Image (cartoon, rainbow, N blue to C red; front, side, top):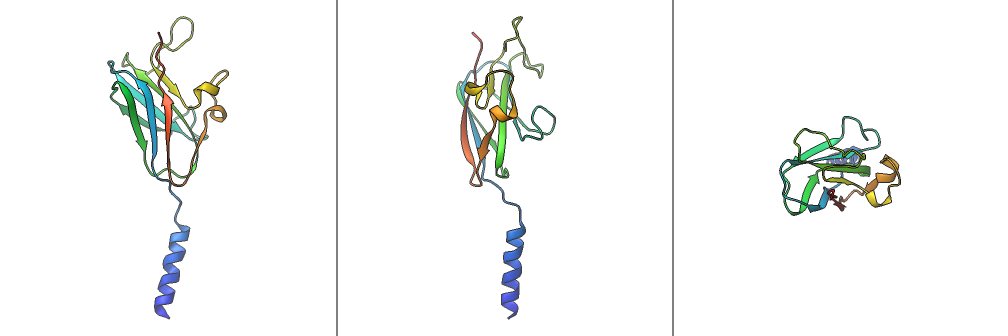
Length: 139
């Protein structure tokens, strides 16, 4: 009887534990080995374009750069990154208002105007995911 009580307690504790996803891997395709760093941010709706997003900084290489965000709760996220060639921590823009450094946004091909969480969001299931996002460089 005591063993049954211990087993039930253990099951109850596991059921109360938060559900964590596997890892989210972002594959930034089209990266270029240029000076500076790639600065990337993964956001929830609550942290989108605010402080509190999960940030990573990596060295650029030619081809695909992989970023891994570990143990995420299942849910909706938005991703953005830029290649900070000027090394000032900000995305530079040209006189016409277009990015002057490499940039990446989840679902960028679907954007029709300023980026919003609703347009950029994607789902991460409990088992995790891999998402490819192109890094676009100005001509």
